[in-house]
Amino acid sequence: MSAIKSCLVITFVLAVVAHCAWAADYAVVAERGVVTKMRDGTALRADIYRPKAEGKFPVLLQRTPYDKTNSTGFGLRGAALGYVVIVQDVRGRYSSDGEWYPFKNESNDGYDTVEWAASFPYSDGRVGMFGGSYVGATQMLAAIAQPPHLAGICPVVTASNYHDGWTYQGGAFEQWFNESWTSGLAQDTLNRSVRNNTNALNGISKLPLTAYPLFELPPRPPDSDLTHSLAPYFLDWLAHPNYDEYWKRWSIEEHFAGIKVPMLTVAAWYDIFLGGSLRNYAGVKTHGENEAARQGQRLLVIIGGHAGSGRKIGDLDFGPSADIEEDDVILSWYDHLFKNVANEFSSAQRVRLFVMGANQWRNEDDWPLARARQTRYFLHSTGKGNSASGDGTLSIDQPRSEASDYYVYDPTNPVPTIGGPLCCDSQHLQPGPRDQRPVEARQDVLVYSTPVLSQDLEVTGPITAELFASSSDVDTDFTAKLVDVWPDGFAQNLTEGILRARYRDSQEKPALMKPGQIYKLALDLWATSNVFRKGHRLRLEISSSNFPRFDRNMNTGIDAASAQRSVPATNTIYHDAQHPSALLLPIVPSE
Image (cartoon, rainbow, N blue to C red; front, side, top):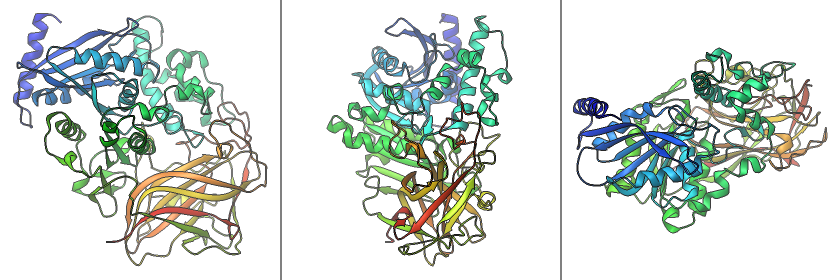
């Protein structure tokens, strides 16, 4: 950067700091586009914000694929409060050189960047990383590489396994997220190729994923040449539906033991990576390689994440206390970790979570809650559990002799996605808590509800639907959704899950079903914390599709990306004494 540009930047930054809403301890110096070379010679570029003062300061590092200039506000604030803030475009994104391929280079590049950040004369040698979503992945992947100067991380709403919980869930392809996220990323790839005269295309309408074949039957072949040019990893994801070595090489879950640093995990109800965030916390706490890592784990569970921010998420207002500022959380974490400031992270209690329904924050010793009692709510009906108008019920009473429930799942008429943990196109598909009554009116949705509650009932912790099921076909999906039904009928989705039946025993080695055979299936609904209020009802929905959040199972045993036909499936849920299908809920006793 030239002296003239440096002076302009400093003057601008000082003016901003002088008018900021937060108290500034230091004037700020900013440097743009600072280059560092990775071990293979690739040049990555970063913006650096630092106090205009003598001395050494801890470094807060963000490595992002979303354009480093979007973090200017945090950079100014962090530097004014006594941190060196470095924000870097990851390889192949925006100002950095190289080829963009998700996850592939983040461990090595993260290691090299951490050590570079620690080498500045104004660095005190401690580097903490921060940020959410893929920026959480850049932290986790750097941490497992164990750079010596990495002293803490703060991954916000991010996954633990880039197969299950990022690209797939329960074996089903995360269609909405994969297409919308990749399309957004591909725009920068397209822009770079146009600038470099390697691709004559321009405009988002030309991206290959806007006409991805899963949207219609029979599917159209994708423009694989164009996709390979702009997002080759997308084709690789489709080519690796099983959990194989392609995924294991950068799975965080395979490397929990290697994380040596304190970590604040920020998870969120209704977030698309809720399950992975909770597994990150529990996994490092249990398997961390040293005591500092195991004891240095903290968990904060907010509302929204990718589903939104603020007090209002989806159709609901969770009250003023639900509104939390991510930047405040990050700075408080590092104030505690690097500056020994006594704050909320100084507590001996590891966990702080927002309890929906009560709409209150609560501190806990750990996650899951030791005092929560796993309780089975069994499915009941006379064989007419179809739709909310049917006779499906939930209770703690063991089933005896009962007729089974069945429905026809037709891939050409899937159950539509309404709200839930979605990313990254809220304009076309809105996330969060939404009224589920439209899907509960369908005959291909089984609905089981408790009677109206006579007192408050708190559910906090992991949730599983344990189903005894059969299908008329060799493969199909089963979905489950936990719902809070309000006195006025509003059906609030809380959390949900899916299982592609061929992955019922293993995501590494799928096995087709035998038509008509009964299988015991476990559907992971991740977790929630919700007080079902007196006068409400607790409800479970069972079906076989949630589209377009997940791709449609064609019921033929062939992946939807290549299937040329679909067939309807008659799917049956059994709930008798020999097949006690149940919803497993962590019930927190009232104090």
